[in-house]
View 1 (cartoon, rainbow, N blue to C red):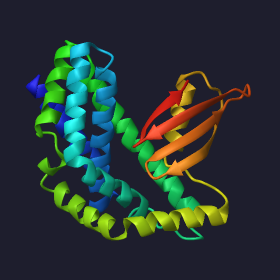
View 2: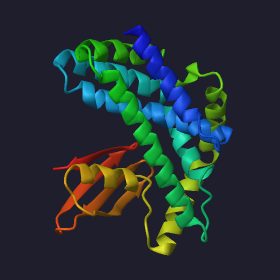
View 3: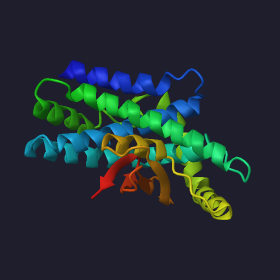
View 4: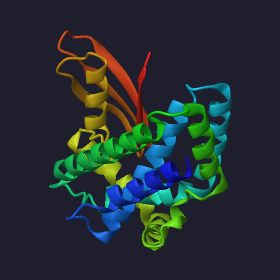
Length: 235
């Protein structure tokens, strides 16, 4: 089990940092967001395994988020500000870039979760892995290269974050169009549920919390809510 967990940690770090064209800031942002989506999806999957696995998952997730939330929020700010230069002329280009990167982040996280839970005793795996999240050995600070970059982003977010997100809202209002960073993720999700040729539009975009509607070829539609890149179809 320990070897499996170590392998998973290495995969998260290497996948987040392996992009040849990524700047150090981009690597740090991807590292933080992949880890965030991974622990959220692990919590979701482990909650389906057993009562014991569910309890371990939620204890691990809550503890991890309490310690790492400021760095994840800083990475989300970095995705929006440092990677996406928003202006009246480049809003759409920047938004498409953010959507593509978010899609990559979610794909990597899903792969890590699948590898962790593939074969063996899933209850034991969930309890062991989520204990690592609870106890801090999976914290973002554990990567000595990425952590200082995330701290700098956190300082920028504390100083400029509110003004930046207000500026985004003003630009979107001016263009009368909202761009969702999760659109590609939602498109793949609804296709899995049988929605043919979905057209996805954003109904609400409030930072990492989004509500999207996917209209299928047969005119049926699905409502999807995304929270910190973890998207679920609403019944």
